[in-house]
Image 1: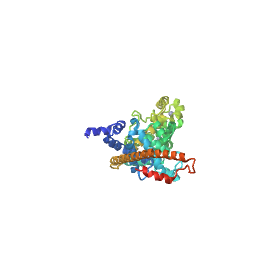
Image 2: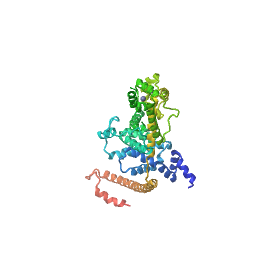
Image 3: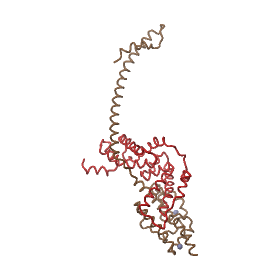
Image 4: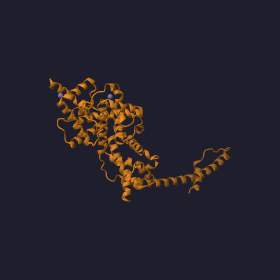
Length: 202
Length: 218
Ligand SMILES: [Zn+2]
Ligand SMILES: [Zn+2]
């Protein structure tokens, strides 16, 4: 295939790429998978970071996507549709195998131990400005931890919004709640994350 | 005496920087002090510098370039304070442009007039951007995922075709059976009807059925 056309496939909006896939364009399918593998992995990783088989699950999602791509009637809803596949797999497969934590309020620490690790964490000395890279990776760790500490229903909302960029309406449908619930969960989750990031912004 | 005030103010500067001082009198006290005290201003500026480094690391754009941490900007606007609680709940959805038009206008107007909520807005937006950048940096280094998925898909399609052929065959056979067996049952029914008045049971005799079936086999 011409290099020019290849490049086109890499920059083409997803709905257009999906339409080509629906016409049995094998190359388009290859690119569609390649362009989504990272975000699918990333989503699964943040929904359940402790699973050892995230690569397999990523492959499973992409397979389900490829298998039923022709059934997607409105290609403009591709992103929403893909996230339905991800969350369905998450609910079907992941939760069956993991011990369910009791539902906790976002304002309570998940366990005593977690709480202790939060309050005893050192706040960087603002007298000296740390090296950018050290600060950055430290902050990455901090954000990762903060996301993992969020109760599941808040974590899903953060992932679907900040990582996947879905609308409130789409998130409400996927999580089977109302838009109002999505709104308040997202606001509370963000405030919670802000608390964790704050020491680094001071 | 002056040192004592500075200590008190310095302790409050992180909260002040984050827009977390909600008490108007205290807020004004800090603002007034910052205007006259070079030392405390330096402390605030250090925080601002650090915040800039974080923003630069995450490649987050400044929300409003004209925004400067001057004391005038940070002054309260008493007329707007009554709306603060109402607006604060909506800031997150405002960032996502998910508010109804009328709510959006209310929030927009308030943010122009209330410096405290504006700081809340800026902090929350920064948090959102930092989280997005964090997600962006996660790597997935598995090779050949696409070719494996496509291989699996092709295998699946081949299997499906094989299954379809098998199903079609079974259906064909079943249909064939159905036609002949129903004919046979009619015969049987006729037979039992004829013998109804006799001693024979109405139930089909399995042995008899077997005797006839081999003739139907194909
Ligand atoms: Zn001072
Ligand atoms: Zn306000």
